Length: 154
Image: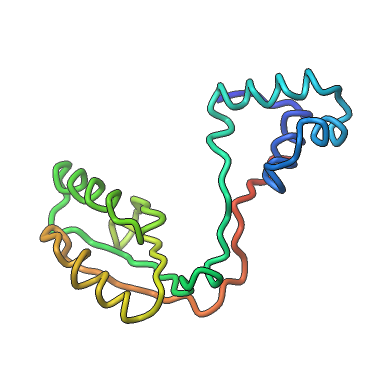
């Protein structure tokens, strides 16, 4: 784990708000000159603290307004089954998150789709094709109350 000082944390908070800010804008916000600001950002990138820069897409504008959380249970709890499941899930574009969880279910999937027809096709043609799945319980998002990628650092 890397130690972050208050300036690094402030830089990360600013980048999480808007990663398209220039180094000059960032430098002004953390009260440093451009060169040390640039060096700090590059160091955090090199150390893997900053993993990548992405664009967050407004799902409704691209006709992908159905968000589904699928809780999945596998038939057997063996390493080979978990590995097979993880590899298969990583290839399905509609799945945007896969988490191995503790509790009643083994995995939690976040799936983004157009509508219920697309969901039906997804379950029948993709999820159900994997014989190691014993149960799928789906919950449908009616309204997103909070959706952020920002991590609190202070």
